[in-house]
Image (cartoon, rainbow, N blue to C red):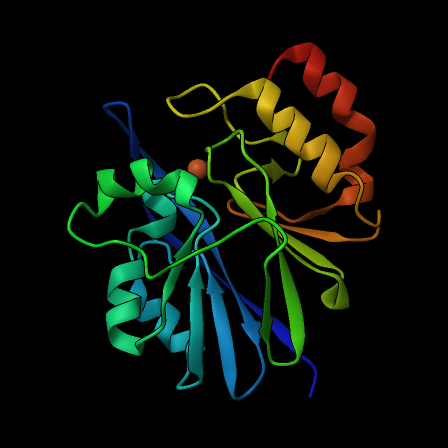
Length: 209
Ligand SMILES: [Fe+2]
């Protein structure tokens, strides 16, 4: 049985630099009827467990450590026994949300995570956050981009720990080089494709966000 992608949207708050914003987050599960991984345990562990529906959770993969993407990770880990995986460059952000709990394992560029017979390759794509990663699943023709690439442009880089020149390099060198037919499954909002976004890189650079 081939791996499939499940999706839910959860709601909560994003907090950074003293501000708070209401947000809806995309939570992605890749798996089959037996096992799955979760990409970004946002806001609501019980809702994610409902989609998991008793399947073995192999890992909780964090695209980055902004609180809205990791706030439910410890509760989901406690409920399932799954390890939380984060790129170590985002540990300073992680500690702002979970000072008493560290992730269980590290994500590294080029690392491969296999679930339900399909492979997710970790792409380190700093810029929105220093430890931001994307997960590329060529067999599913999909890349999970967190807050690095959205429909319409790069993720926000106006707050602490972010850099616009760095995210542009990540998007240009690591994402826009993927097959144009690749579906872009984002951290917030609608999906897009690499081919739909690639022609707009120069516009994003010119506007500066
Ligand atoms: Fe973010």
